[in-house]
Amino acid sequence: MTEGIESFAHDYMAAQKAAWELHDFDGLRRLEHADVRFSNINGTVFDGRDAHFAAIEGMKSGFGNAPISQRWRYLMGDGALFSLAYEWSIETPGRPTVMAGILVGRVEDHLLVEEWGAIYTVER
Image (cartoon, rainbow, N blue to C red; front, side, top):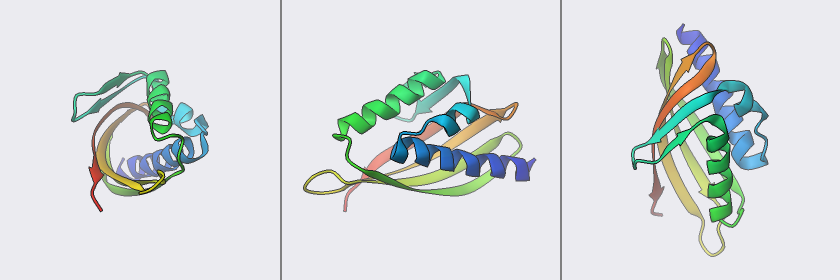
């Protein structure tokens, strides 16, 4: 299933970029289970796809709706698990903010059901 999980991961990366950069949630809506759970290393937990979408909107608003560009990279996958690395560049006034992260996702019946991640601000 490695090929299948890698294909899913690439679709997921494209859907994340569309949501964050273009406010287009259709891809994530197709790939995430309605009851998906997101857990971040800092203790933040989002239960459900709608909570994930609200968190994206909240973070974007927290950055003053500044333009965000993302770079994603597939790291590995096997069976139902995959891992990705990403970097965001947020064009905040004065000085861009750069954030980097890593995540592990678990897929069931071709839908993301769990994601564990860590994100941090990169000092430049």
